[in-house]
Image (cartoon, rainbow, N blue to C red; front, side, top):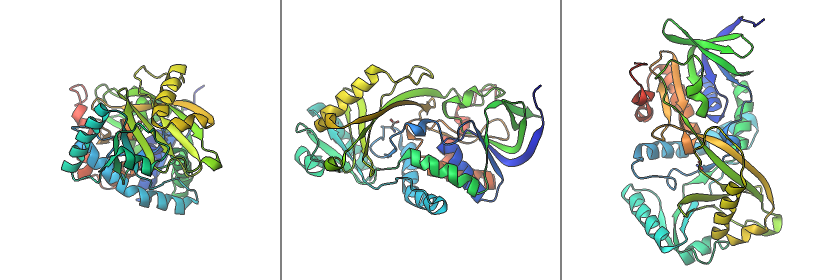
Length: 387
Ligand code: GLY
């Protein structure tokens, strides 16, 4: 028979223990609130696949200036966030200030990159135009055909798996309770989110529930219709190569390009790992690694850096980015009282972890939505059913 006992209530209950949920929990516990995070495998999710490129400028799309501001605010916090987490846990997160070089392989790409440079300049961003020769001087392994590029000195990197491990260690040290379980249902009492029922039938109650379940957020049983839009899963396949000692550094910074309309990026880590990403596929919740995905990544990466075919290929994997209808995150209170969103981070989950953690902790501690979070209110999608 199912158990129905109710565990002692927390002030905050987070559904989803990926880095967004854990980051919010860590910062919220630091504000003195009691916090519980429910997940079958804390520290999992898209971060286990992500390359960890922190690229608010080189991933900027036209018309996404509010997202740029949020991304830059998070990038600026990264150094202090990871230093504090490392000092607290004794674990390194692999945060590295490398900068990023975005290059063009033909004259069409070069024109596009030049336009992007103009856009960067109009926004006052730190982005420098380099000739092909200057690009190869910075990164000698680049293909001889590189036609020019943008050097963005503030787009860095972190090792997502190490960051997740540090948050899994840091949360309990800060007083967060990690409950290893699946959530079966959101409980709503008197028109207010009041807790969750777990798969084993037991219940957890809380004053505030934070929904941080990535592309599964809107599928939570018990969630009233219209409170959250569909968060679509966008599959990314990624490769991990190893750079043997005699070949290092091989690359000294993140390198990216658009090849045949697809974004390709190479992230070299201090430990000799070289991550190559990523496909972008919208076909549901499937995470199969396909021959076609691996082929396209290797083909495009090889055009950019021909010498990489010599390197050992050590891992292929696929994950799901949580894409909201406008590709920007949902941060803050929803139309259902007591339910707070921290989801929909799409291509920017790793980048946006520190700022999401700070903004949500501020809201949970004070009840005030910080100005930086205001453009990302979930109410921009609220339908009549939920209002
Ligand atoms: N931010 C890189 C990606 O989502 O592929």
